[in-house]
Amino acid sequence: MNDSVQTRGEQMLALRKARMAAALPILRGGFRPFFLLAAAWAAFAVLAWLCAFLYGVPLASGFAPLAWHRHEMLFGFVGAVIVGFLLTAIPNWTGRLPIAGAPLAALAALWIAARLAVWFSGTPGLLPAFVLDVGFFVVVAAVAGREVIAAGNRNVPVVAMVVLFALADAWDYAAAAGLVAGEGTPARAAIALVVVLISLIGGRIIPSFTRNWMAKRGFASGLPTQPGRFDMATIAATAAALLGWLVFPLSTLTAAALLAAGLLQLARLSRWRGWRIWSDPLVLVLHAGYAWIPLGLLLLGVSAGGAPVPATAAIHALAAGAAATMILAVMTRATLGHTGRELRAGPATVALYALVILGAALRVLTGLGAMDYRFGLELSGGLWASGFALFVLTYAPVLFRASKAK
Image (cartoon, rainbow, N blue to C red; front, side):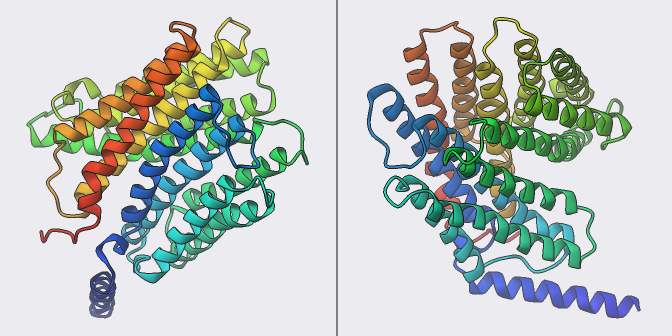
């Protein structure tokens, strides 16, 4: 029995290597095309939004400018990163063959077609964009679900999040077309899903990478542990609070739930002892990215409670801060690790972390009225977009080359 299992495992490994070798380097893992496309789109879409909002440059989209900005940041940019992460993680979770070569190229082409359809949706209308954009997430969910279920893997909830993301995307189209009320509510739903996903995935990788770093350097006590009951309770409280924000955004009960979730997330973050790993930017940035979640939840709770704190400040803390920083942290680490490079943040990597974190901080301060609004948008947006542009310049050569032998 053991011999047959071992033989099958060896066969799968051989098939995996053969499939990778037959594909172009850029198509040898989901992270390669989707991380690169996501970063390039993030930089472009923010600058396009600033040109439309501040300087009146017209957009060809059927979405209103603000709705287009929300949609493309969440379902275009963040959606691409989620897919790249999922397609890269599934072979590690299941031991099955990766999506590579022509199938991966087809998925990337579908994402590009969706972005173009959204961009030019003003003339033909939103229906073609809807079919391509929502269809992209449906196809990814079907492919990922097949792999996870066939392997009997525990990560079915992560695939379910992609299905929910597709539903939120469809909802956003319905709102943009005037078929349902509540413009902006689908975007809130997508932000809530992203925050819960970060809580799930971040809660696994941050303590794990931190523990490994500390153990290698001789820390004998106070090592972070993997998620336990407290972590599950914190995630559940966060999901419940965000659901309240989605349904009753200005309720006193919602405000209390958001504040409680923020405090729980802050306590969770402190249990990972991030202050001990200040000398390693690749690990430290994970803690910095996660720190935006309690900040965003607390700001959101104060805003929901009726205090003079604009909700936009909290939303940008969660989106431009937590989501973007965690995305960069995962993209840089995964790119280095999966291409056989040393897990070390060079000067350019540290710089792109700083640009995005500073851009997000200034955007939150602008929302709070601490800066001139126009200047704050220009400065924060420029810094934030520059961080993702720097990722493209720094990591495109790595993503287009074959992995180094280990």
